Image 1 (cartoon, rainbow, N blue to C red):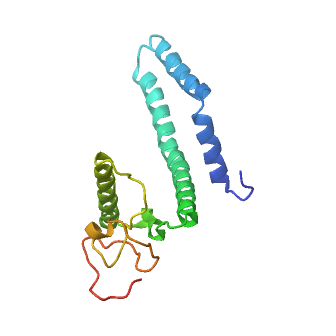
Image 2 (image 1 turned 135 degrees about the horizontal axis):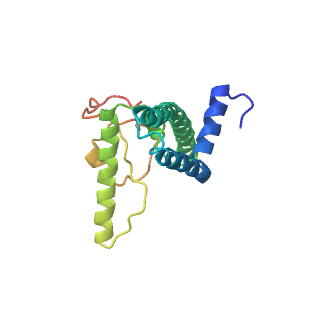
Length: 175
């Protein structure tokens, strides 16, 4: 744990770790059991029901924020690790870095290209060929259908994020 983390971050981490433990579940189940057992004692009154409803509502409300905070931190950390793997992999498409920031339409263009690549690989396997290799998948100058075919030599020039449904003008410079 970082010494520079805010009180909220430290508290959120601690509560998230604590809430995921089996003992915490058992404590919650025991609380419900005690509440159920006390029902006849309090004649199943409105106050008896209000106690459990209020308690669970408050806990749920607070846990939503703590869980979201933990999930946001975990997602950012995972994205950074994946970005580093992409960055450090020779021949990797750097345009895949930071995909989580793209609009749905732009993401759909990437998905379409990778689905086509997977389909091509399955067809190669069915015909007895190897499905390994590193075909170009991201190209500004070629539409996705042709950019998925194996290229003789990969070049870093001209690789950019695909345009969702738009083609670059003929003869336009890459980048």
